[in-house]
Image (cartoon, rainbow, N blue to C red; front, side, top):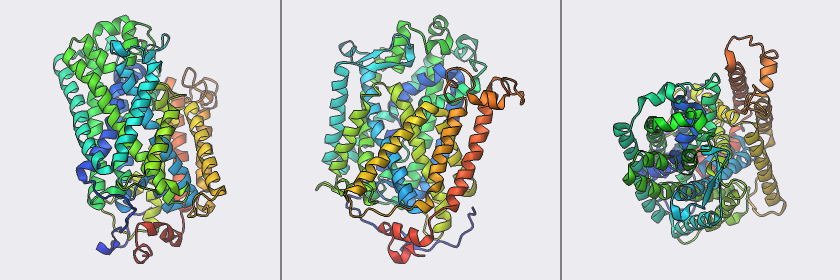
Amino acid sequence: MSDVVSAPQTAPQQPQLDEGLDREVGFLGLLWASETSIIGSGWLFGALGAAVLAGPSAIIGWVLGSVIILILALVHAELGGLFPVSGGTSRFPHYAYGSFAGATFGWASYLQAASVAPIEVLAAVQYLSTAHWARNFFVASASAGSAGGTLHGWGYLAAGILMLLFVIINIIGIRLFARINNAITTWKVAIPVVTILILLIGHFHSQNFGHLGGGFFTSTNAFKNILLTLPAGIIFSLLGFEQAVQLGGESRNPGRDLPRAVILSILIGAAIYILLQVAFIGAMKPSVLATNGGWLGLGTSKSAVATNLAKGPFFTLVSIAGISWLATLLRIDAVVSPGGTGLMYTTASARLSFGLSKNGFVPTAFEEVTAAKVPVFGVIIATLVGILFLLPFPSWAKLVGIVTSASVFMYAGAPVSLGAMRKQKPNLARPYRLPTAWFLAPAAFVGACWVILFSGWQTYSTLVIALLFGYALIWLSYLFKLNPGAPKMDWQAAWWIGGWIVGMGVICYISPFGPGGILGGGGIFKHVLDLGGTDPTHMGANASVYWSIVISAAFSLIVYYWAVFMRLPDSKVDEYVRDVYPPSIAEH
């Protein structure tokens, strides 16, 4: 794919649309919409989850995760400026590959957004359970130490009340939401920064990065452990940059503001999370590590400290350090921070269903807006779906894997859409043009596929089942003619999707992240690639991990270029982008 295209046309090529939503959100509103989604429950739990898997080397996981997400964010920055529509991530693949691709990635987008609100609510309730009056809201697992637990008793009611609050605020209107969100996000960014400074300046133990916690690399499978930190909380923590894209249809100046908001939000979030991991590792009491068997032992310890860490990692950390005033702030932030993110994703879910309806896949009821320009039906349905997630996944740790996998599946639709659009519509004005897209777009797709691989077979198979359920719902909408604008399915441009889903499933199953691979052996790859245990590459315990990465990357590149080759013809793209560009513009 080449970046050499004819010169873009001038102002008349700019998008001209009115989707019935208020265009009142400025640059700060867009930036804070993404930032409030990035700085959510991830900062409260992500550092602990990564540390008990990889120890100090979890820092490498944060850097790797930040690079993957940043590349994906750059791809979204171009597409968001090119198509500033509400629910953008569900509509980019539709424009490039047609209705089946739009339905597939649209449903993945909705699934991801609808499941984030309950995970943020779970985080808030877990932290609240550190208070004596709420101690029974969440019960930590007696056998899993800091690695698990479950919502309990009145905790379900507290979670339901928070979800209802999200509905009320959303129904009031987008302008009030933007004002509330700006204030919430300012708080959300300030508290982690204060925590970092306090822990690094006065409570830092450098020996925690060495032999005391088990060494910087805590096991012979250190590389695999680092990779496992990505789906265990790191990628989830960095999610959210796309929220500015989802609000594109409500942006005051999307061409100028969308790309800047997307890129800056991930840079701020990545810096905060990396420093938080350093501060968490350095501030842990050395005696706690010594008595619990180091970082890996802390993840399975049944001690009281491990149990308290499961409920509130940073709260417990600063309480042990004797910083009572910061502990109080953290308990407050544990409601404000996840609450702000959950509120944002409830809003995003409604915008995604709005986009799915615009594309004809779900009933037109999702397009109906109130006098305050809010798609209220979409808000209510998104909340009900979120409440359903609380039942099978009653803890942060249990839900984070499926949210991460759905998110990167959704993100993967953007790089292939960018590759196609560079060829289909090279002359449409791009407020932000991704440099070296010939390299970064396929690299972004490979990075997304890697995260799906690292999530493991169990998570991937759950995601596929959820996708099949979405296909069934869309088929019912077609069957009962609930949306008169339902398009014909563009099967000819979507064969690569089926091949990708099946191929990734096979790779996940036989890799070290498949059945038996995560908990112990090297998976089927150990026998296929290590010849029954002999390592022909002399790469040691991680040989099959390296091979799975190489093979999945090669497969992903094949799928990427296959997808770009199978893109819709230009005339069909003209038909689909007319909701953004007038015909005289789109057909150039």
